[in-house]
Length: 65
Image 1 (spheres, one colour):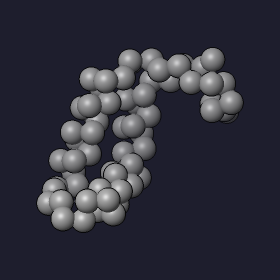
Image 2: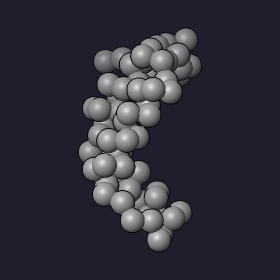
Image 3: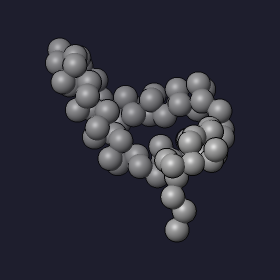
């Protein structure tokens, strides 16, 4: 099993993840009123709180250059 630093992955993909998170909330809770940057910031904080610094993932999910 491989290990990844999940917070750094979220940070690295932040532009795309912010847009995807916003789209998901707007699709599932259309009446929600939120600031996309604040939503992502809170998501990032919760990842840091709820996940381990190093998360174990199956090797087939990781490909090194």
